[in-house]
Image 1 (cartoon, one colour):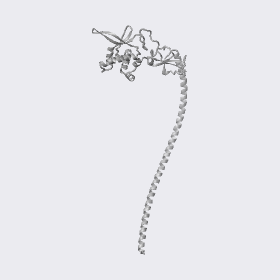
Image 2: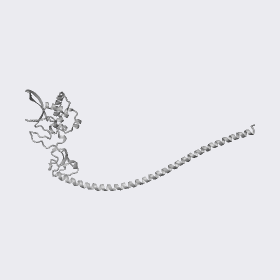
Image 3: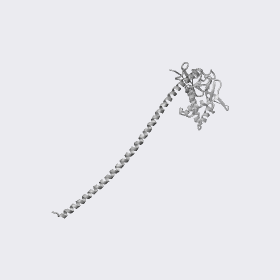
Image 4: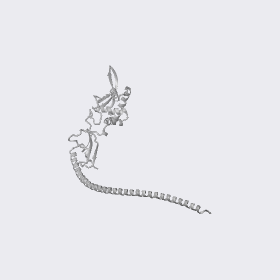
Length: 305
């Protein structure tokens, strides 16, 4: 058996270990309590923040409600004003249409953008849409002349023109995007040089005895080289033939190719000429050997269904 002293020493060691264990547990619990207190404090701070945010949101919501009420009142006011303006404009539109109808029946030509041809009531219920020399479109009663002669003479609609006339009206950029072939572009420029004095470089010459105008192949070659700088003489000769062919095709053979004997330095040679006959029917141009063209076709006739 162990002695009493031995038993006492074992009890003291156990007691010490137990105390140390309890101290460790107490330290851990203390730390846990501190952590919980920190968490609780943070939770309180969050709750206070949420309360503050809730109060702010409530205040903003109240302001938005007030603004919504103001907007609804303003919308109601504007709707009332709009209705009143619509009624007044409807009455004014009727008055304008009555005045326009009277003016049209007197022979007036009115800009298309100012006329509601679906609503205006005129004698015969038909309006004619025309394009004048000023480039603007007008409505009129069919075949009625403008007593004030505004906007110049009636111009042909685009579709009434020959293809070469349509191309000749285009600017350089549009012509390039429309016509890929160089001879086609040269043909359009050649025609424009004949009809537009502002071009300056015009190879056409006035003719006689059934010929209105003509251009010599040799002059056309030099003209092409001026239009296309850097073009060789050999290539220019080829372009002369191709350009003449393009003019014939695009003018629907209103022009012709004729050969004529020329004399230079005592020598005779035959040269081609691109000829515009005096009696050629060119839309918008007056024939030298006949009465003036009939009134050009208009862009369209509009009437009530």
